[in-house]
Length: 193
Image 1 (tube, rainbow, N blue to C red):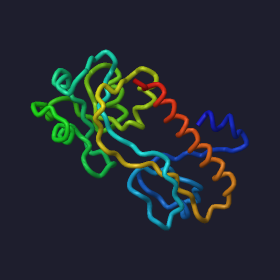
Image 2: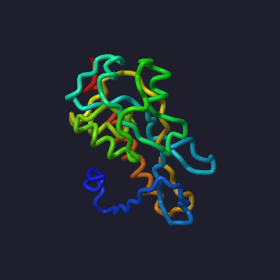
Image 3: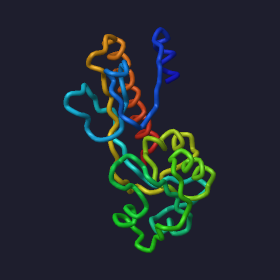
């Protein structure tokens, strides 16, 4: 957001964060960035990014194969609201293995951010949203030791159809999409084998 403020200093952003969907029209909100399933067709929406879930760990932990997961505590997040289907160690084990992975053991959190901090401290391995983990990975705090991944949801840019700031909203949307594309290109360049 700081880059946006530097690029467009004349635009003031008011940011409200919530995982509850609220009406843009009723609450006089210009745009929303929503994570989940495809929005209602009546909404003006643009796909920003697709998410996936993958194992992340502190660089202190050496993980070279799925079997290496047996050597570290599993970090869990209970009751994630999205995606609606489970993204957890049980699902991971059923798809990728190893079959002897004890998915009941480990430390359980109710919040993904706290779980991520615990993992950064080298306390275990975690299945994280790739979008949420990207900054920590790019800054060397975490790494993605395995290539396997579970499907996540999508991020959408939603516009208020009754909004009057169409030109500003269009600038913001185009800028945001450009930044996401640049970030993806940088990730690919940084991770070429």
